[in-house]
Length: 196
Image (cartoon, rainbow, N blue to C red; front, side, top):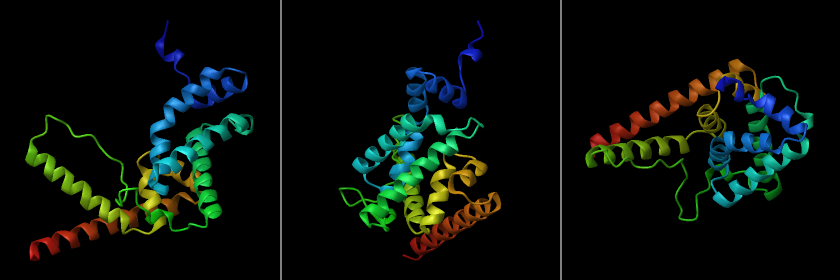
């Protein structure tokens, strides 16, 4: 038996779910639970709200899977649904500045990474400093550029364009400007540290 034939693509899973296969739905949730949750959390910066919106996205998929047209763009469709849920949340809560919120401890959120125990202490400290520098630079980006950077962790440029409804060239330009801005901000921070 060929193992590759047992692995279904996203479109096949959606079609299978629409035909009554609940395991196909569970597989879709498993495939996207980490990346989709992290994307939502990067926008709302509140774990309980992110969990609620994440569940709303999959409830919406459960209810409306039949409206999805299997064209190989499921990931973009799913992230667009998540983006719309976040935008609706902001509109409903009249909290358009949610991108600048912090968690319960007052810390701005960036995806945490687990420390590698085999990493030497000085290297770990250097890594943590780099993460903090990048996190601070990301927080200084415009909300649009910040969204591009978070989406780029999980999607191709074309998938981002499909998700946000912008031309591919605009997405490429936004991402390029965001990376350039991050480099400038990090260079400024480094220069300021050297002066002090």
